[in-house]
Image (cartoon, rainbow, N blue to C red; front, side, top):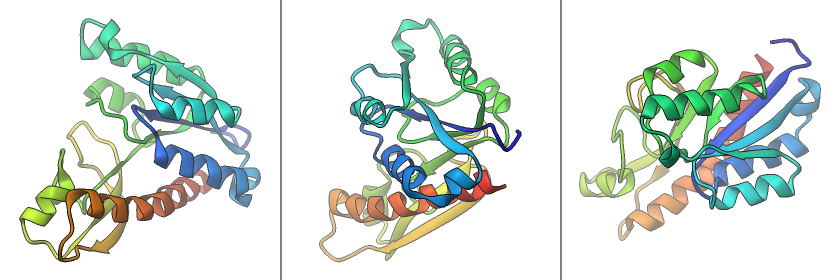
Length: 196
């Protein structure tokens, strides 16, 4: 990618709070101007994803590729890739994108596709991470930013944030504490990758 083409495309399924943190960091950060980087588009698989409104309010192109409109995961991923590719992304960022991507999609963006997962990988892949950490008696929990591979919640770890598990924590209170760290960590990793 040339220095003049550091487009970031973010995929969301809901509120996209990590997307919003990245957008705000790009707006106020010197790194975006220095590396001529911008969040070029936010794409969702759900038309009612609240994060789309945030993106539009910040002048970012949005699109919806509804997974329910396609007969297979492969067909959906082909349509999704076509939409993402319109923006010539230097980086594709998953931010609460609740679809398991096919190996073909992952391969197409090899080295440019990252995700944030609400656990200290390799522990607790998949769903219900906070409750599982509490149930196992973990004293610490957190979040991981990693490169996306065809294997769910695997791939090189790029950064991690750690928070204590407090007595009396519920999955909701632990999730809220982890999320505040996600909002700091994810923009930092995006900046580092864009800086190359």
